Length: 297
Image 1 (cartoon, rainbow, N blue to C red):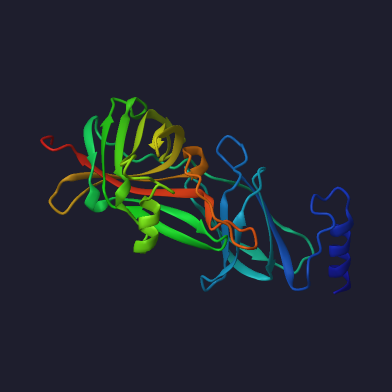
Image 2 (image 1 turned 90 degrees about the vertical axis):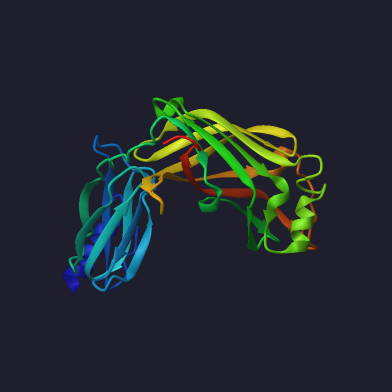
């Protein structure tokens, strides 16, 4: 017991120890490692999770910008999982023992994930029945309001390389739906979307940039409320499959964040405490399936 306490004391006060000054409570150990890519560069914001032998989560979080993972964990045997976009997940066993020293795993090297087959070149279109364009807005600084647009159409021309592709999406502004009729009527009014004067939202892009693995950045022009701004969609390609009738489908999930003031949607009302009724930032989430354009195999 005395040696264990002395060991912890010296580790905590060693000025050369990067964890110096960190207090480790009784019954716990320190789990550390660095998460790197195949060429030795740190992987920041990699997600990690430590489970016990019954699969219950003990601790989770993200690596720092230098790829470092640090967690205090009770003594025992655990399963560590580390994942990051564009990489194959890592899984391994770790033992936290009563030795007075950090349990260092050294370097965890993540391997690049194989890319999924891309859609063949040609004309494709969004299949609305299996697609969704939704959004999330902040309400009174507390709750989140979820909504969607029910009427939209889109065409994608897939080039010989994906970087040569282009897309055009048109959304019916009046089709906004948050499941509350009074709120939806207000959103359609001149205070917000002003659907009588601006009946559609449009997005056009011919800039597809590969971010590694199955991740892409799709940058284009979004026209909303009569104002056009540049927007980048963070897109994750989900691959190709066959539908119920044998038709070819490809799927993608994407998201971005908009600020409504950028599009002169400036209506605002404040609560007595100075909290905005409707937040400035709107998160847009898309789940899209595309099929070959009608008349094409």
